[in-house]
Image (tube, rainbow, N blue to C red; front, side):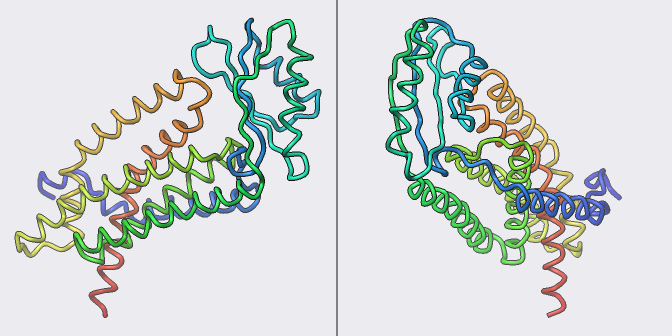
Length: 297
């Protein structure tokens, strides 16, 4: 093994493929058993933005909502802490969708009159509209994956497309599985996070594929397996620096950015980690597999 192959990535492909398979199957199992905790965007309900003249403890507000039969509501602080603005999300069925905002407004003005509750904005999403948004969100991800598959096939070779798409499905399924396991809210902004992860992951994969193609175009007698191993070693420092920098920013926003973007950067942080792994240990093994199939045909 020469200096361009300091780490034998391809030698670990069988083990990492088993790990990925277990993670994906486990995530699918959790998704089928628990499902996703759809937010108001996807399930229907109301979003109420409230400003209080005095500071209100979020735990107290949540307890008050539960005691008034709004047990599935979400409460988040928005803006600066000194502004005392809170976003309340309350799911509602079709028959209660038109009365839910009146009920919440009445409850806030009664139970938090001393704190000076003032309704700033209310948004209502019907259950049918929420379902359509949910379908559209998943369709957007599917179309993105199809577009990426065509792009990879045209830019490189169609033997590379299955590896890139498998890696992206791997990333998305694991993130969805973690969201299902933790019960984190799955909303329209999380679809945006998943699309961002797809873009990040495929960029990492394309960098590796570009380097593999460079070696293939040199016309050497090296096998695809060896070229992939060399390419992964040569791009490793770039991959580590990019991933660590992105993850640092994402974690900073997760811990310091406030509750309203908490779940978004939770998805991004998982996606950076999983996407970096998949560009090395998912896309490359699948590409090798399809190359062997192509050689046998």
